[in-house]
Length: 169
Image 1 (cartoon, helix red, strand yellow):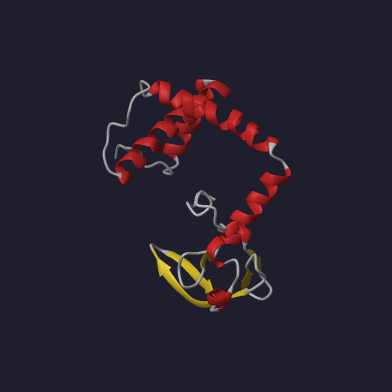
Image 2 (tube, helix red, strand yellow):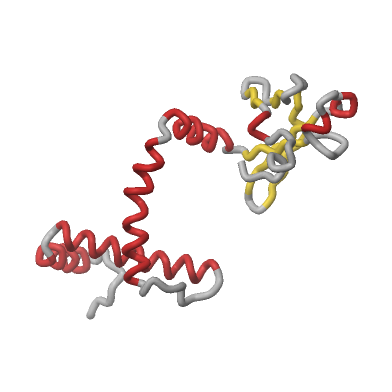
């Protein structure tokens, strides 16, 4: 929903209705955009839809500046549509999610010194973030249960050979 076409006064992809049973999109003018091909980009399977009726369409200027309007659909797009539908039905859930999720991130950021990541490149930053989240979760566990039983459980886990920690021979 962040496409620039809306700001330019044209129809966005959400103005087109997908009909799953027929695997077509219906445009605001009532035309059917048929599936033409499928390809893979950056590991995502994408389906392409369009119609050749755009040339004679009276509302074409409100739809596209190209020869025809094309719609791209990800193979798992229905998941996003279901989430959006649930969010539209219960907008208060987003407020609840923000209240639930933002606190841990604020705590993690404060522990980081309210600063930037120390690593560069996405894989390294992802690793750094994963370690921050692990430390946060470990602290939460220690606050929920006493440290004594936790340490005993870790020792048992290591003694049984399930840990990846150093073991003396």
